[in-house]
Amino acid sequence: MIGFFANVLLALSWTVLSGNLSVLNMIFGFVLGYGALAVLQPGAPILAGYAQRVPRFVIFVFFFIKELIKANVKVAFDVLTPPWHMQPGVIAMPLQARTDLEITMVANLISLTPGTLSLDVSNDRRVLFIHAMFLQDEKTLRDDLHEIERRILQIMR
Image 1 (tube, one colour):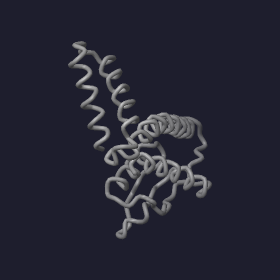
Image 2: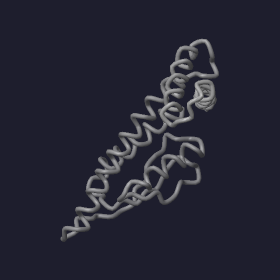
Image 3: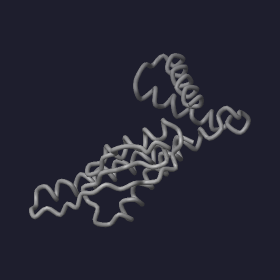
Image 4: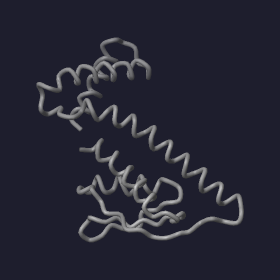
């Protein structure tokens, strides 16, 4: 998080020093700041991992958009073309996430995907209960959800 705030500060500094207050200039300042922090990272333990998180975040955004589109198409197709092929059910997904923030991110991003809804977390915070519209293949669904969790944890850890 400190790396991100340092990057934003560098981007704002670039914007002020260049005298050009535009979104494009701010993005350019962010990219320059990212480059500077990536070079400084080996000598600054406080920045550990920041240079790897930004590309992972960008890749995750595209991955999640792809998953979102696939889920939307699947739900829309099922709703618009009878007979319905839904096989709703609830699964228990073991979590690798440990902190409240990680669990919240995983649960919310799973709920954002059409056809799935996070219901509850076990008392020991090790299992997430998920309702799915299409539970034909529980292993495939679980693997897809674990992939979302894995990518989120790569960004957050």
